Image 1 (cartoon, rainbow, N blue to C red):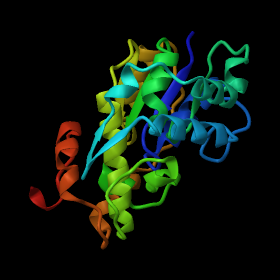
Image 2: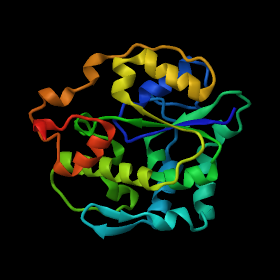
Image 3: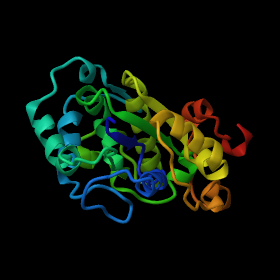
Length: 243
């Protein structure tokens, strides 16, 4: 079957989906880190920076992604992605794929290069997602312009929003499934059944931690920003403060 990839912002618990695939006999490349990310990541990081050259910041929290969907994909990007995925693409495994959150930053061109892939779009409530750090917190590290802020949580929230806008702007592939992390944790059986129907083979069940959902409720720091509201409502998340 075609490869499988998981996209979604870092600290979104994509590890749970990767662990499910691994436990189900899916080859995710070699070597992997503790989060089941394919290593080394450098070529994927560099590919994200190549794509970022063609994203136009409009000021504030708006970006123009339109060029990405029509321009020729640079050979540099393609070479970096094929180099990063070498262990996956060359593997004879009947079921294979990869996971690294930075795939999200490269998604518009990944989907054009690999339209046949099974894409699992993993979403987590940003109020929980921004509680811990991730490599993609500072978008400037990947060549992406955004409003300057000294508030680390706000920086993470902007990263979450940017990645969501990037995904939403991209024409979806034929094989696309959106999964909320909260549904996977709180109703694993129903959610895994959806995944099995999508992928076409049985999946293992892994242990989950219910306390991974709603951690923002006991957090004393900044965990919500008004600019997240529209996206949160689209995904069916509660707006803190009853908004």
